[in-house]
Image 1 (tube, rainbow, N blue to C red):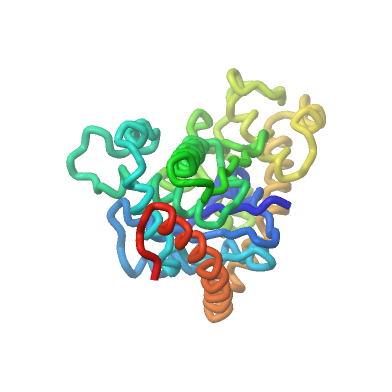
Image 2: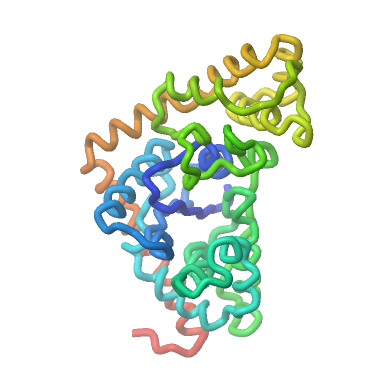
Length: 324
């Protein structure tokens, strides 16, 4: 198995789009690392107490997915090599390529009150990945541009200073890579959407999940078939059901083609509940036992530091810094 690395910000709320688009593809392989990227959360205003709570809650979700062994789960800020390598990459990055990043253009371009971190954080993301010599980065479709920048930086560094970095590849699921809002199926499911019915949280009770799916926006028709252009709401629900059940979109559409939207949505709700219920129970169990979370994070930190430090030392040596 190829080594992998990926990270998620500690928002405290992980929704079905995060799970299907990325987390579901995170495999607990030996030598792989999964990180709560708390430093990335500081690019926008934050509350310190909320940051601490959300970091532990996000770690609980990753551990509930079984990512603690034999892979490792850790907190980004507890491994200082991330920030140190980020500065070295900042000195190699270019204003033009950072200015083209879609997320900066949507959140910060033209504003004078945004932090420098919002502009430069793709370099920290690149450092996160390159520290562990991983071959794959399982991400959602919206993060592909950041992986391309990471590859460019690795190739640029290796060309100038020698073959230090492994050049990673993105791993993106073909189906379900971009889960859409249940209330506006032309937009991505997002934690920032103020409408709670737009997203399914992995901590939502079964009855709440069912209600959100049954009231999901579709169209005025009755026949169930896959057409993202004409029937985006139905297509979104079909992709969700297919991804979670392992049954093809075509097979699910055939089963419900003439049964109406009510029966179809009920079937989708059954599939989602079956997938989310055990994860929710494990997350709640972990949150009730924070020492278990902390022990897992400490183990992950030790392993991450042991692997990151030699790589950073090699980078320092290559660029001409004195290594103690």
